[in-house]
Length: 582
Image 1 (tube, one colour):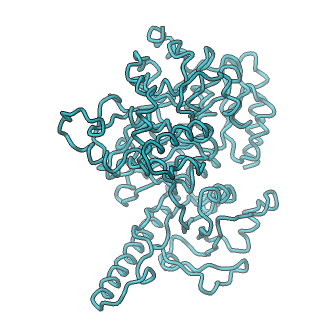
Image 2: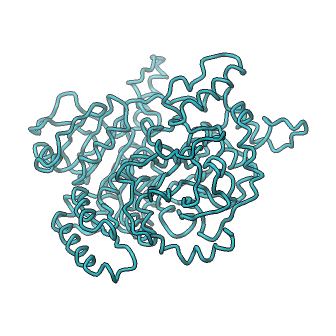
Image 3: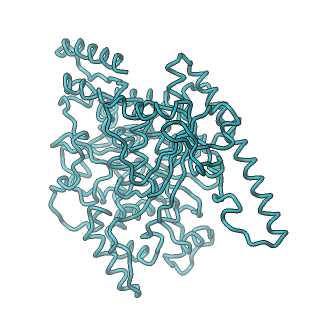
């Protein structure tokens, strides 16, 4: 990696010598994240750097939390369907970000590029006021496919009492899910294993276990994790590491995993079977690739491991079901240890390198995958078109700032509302509770928690492989829909609103209502929402200082040191959309 990165630096320096003749930026793919600063040091004005290996590692960690996320990201990063665009709109200058939630029929406002600093704020506070030099970040079909509506629907957002009263009695809206201990398995080895472990450490409950199963001897793993002393020693508080030495391609090695110590000796009592894991990740083994394995060969090994794991899981589950039935017949009390402690077997997530392998995933009944090379290629193409996309995609895949997650509709609609939503009969009494909810109404509720809804996936979409099952930037956002428990929403939310990869609404304890009367709950909801704006967004649209970005300034890595003419990638699209904007 270091040798490849040094060649990249040399090429960037050569291009910089012709800086006066360049009218565009340069996208540079690096292999090691530690070398990223080299290019940023020598050519910050012309170069956009991505570290593909590190990006895929972070994405795979996210996919252990949400197996369907990879297909959604692949859809977002491609040029078919909805994608991200920056654009200025005079019609919304002076409005707050909360006020424009429903102002675009064919697009979803996602963030703001601050004109004064060239920084990008994804999912800003509702009270952020749009300035003339700001460009809005949208999810849209194309840059000329949407326009500003008259704002009639958005007027609902100004009625804070109405929105707050709908959710203040809804416990699920304010409930924070409790984290539980997890057991995770990584099959294979990557050279960025240290970074993957540290990212996983930030999103699991205390007492969770990570089992590393690969052919690398236990005594060598310490050196490889520390990169021969170049990285600090792992200091884990939430996560404990269990080393297992074996071959993921050998069935007998997968039947029962036995943890070993640093000397490679088995640890008494430290055994586990595949049906006890909450998440299983099959990595494209770097060791095999370094030894000359081709992409198809690597994918073949991953598929073999996947088939073995699924078959062993199925057999173990059937054995436990038989044991459960035997105990029931003998009328012996069942304990949690007598049966599989996890009610549902996890679906392994496999990293795939070759696009031709995609068709085999359906045959292998693979519910989740990461097409790493396709995603890297799409990211490079997006940044080549618009260099500001490096900031957007970097944040979405970094584990900092805002992230994508799949949330259940039950976090936004109560059980009663979900039942009434399925009723097709018209409400003759015009009872606001007895109605269906549109995509925009769900989006307005999400803004109370400082979240952006990008789309949804119906419950009856059975496959996770087809990204078309997920409806991003849906049409007819004002039309009421029938929702049911199990429908998933594609949610963009702040990283500090996440706990263990699950969505919760606020880190402030006083946000949760403890009083009894509806009037008290409504008052508490409104006051706590305004008081804790940093956590859930300011749901009041009263006049406020326009200098809000001080509380929302991204980290130093999110500030772009850009050439003034950095939007040439969308110039033609802007010209086509000029009549709409005017």
